[in-house]
Structure formats: structure tokens, C-alpha cells
Length: 181
Image (cartoon, rainbow, N blue to C red; front, side):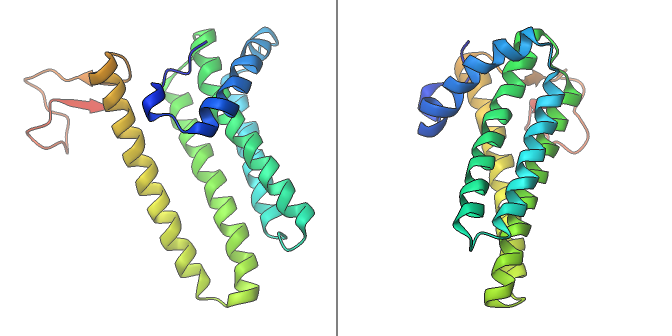
């Protein structure tokens, strides 16, 4: 089952570790009738636990647990979409839920690390972590939009929808002829 992402924009750990594992586990989860949204929520739980582990990362066991939990989150984040496509259960709600789960995961990790660094560096670290979180959110949104554009225009697949030329969605610049959901 292909990941749907062209190799030229795929990150190496995804290509060689995460997606191959996801391709092996996805059919099993489909046979077990595990809903893709349940996989998203389980991944988010791993992310929250990783944030809690990173809060105690001075102990190497917790640092390693955080790393393993983040790898598990990353794996589940790949499985949920593949499972939805395989089972024909993909939906706008699932896509939104996946995004929410991702943001909750990263928030938990940033907060866990900030709480640890606060004890070492002082309260100013929260401003740095907030700036990092905002930067991460902006980068993730920009990457996803560009990836979908690449898939749609470069490979004739993806999620871009050509708008009716006579109807412009509210808030879109007049030069735009498509939007992504």
C-alpha cells in the first residue's frame, strides 16, 4: 500500500522506518476493524505520555520512554490515514481530528520540555517554548498546504478542490482559483 507521498518530498525516517511499519500494521488493524479515529486518539495518548515523560527527562529512562512514545505516535499518525483510505472510512472529521491530535501531541511535548527547562533556566523559557510552538504550527500548516498542492498539481491527486469560477470562497484572495480542505 503506497503512502501517497512522492519520494522526493518524503523524509528518510518516514520512508525507511515509519511508513514500512505502518504498511505492515494497517491491514492487521483493518481486519480487527479498528476505526482510524481510534488510532488517531491512541496516537494522541502516546504523545501526551511522551510529554509527561519528557517532563522527567533528566532520568534517561524517561527520556528514552519519551522518544519511544513519540515514535509510536508517529507510527500511529501514519497508520490512521492509511487505514481510513484502505477501509473507505476517510472523512473531513477524521482529517480534522488527526490535525487536532497532532497539535495536542506537540503541545504536550513542548509543555513537558518547558516544565523541565523552567526548573533549570527559569520562567523566561516559557516564552521561548511558546515561540517555538507557534513557529512549529506555522511550519506544519505551510508544509501540509504545499504538500497537497504538490500532490494535486504535480501528481493529479490530493485534496485540492477546484472552485466554481463564479463563486469565490470567503476570505480567499481574488487570484486564487482553488482551496484546500
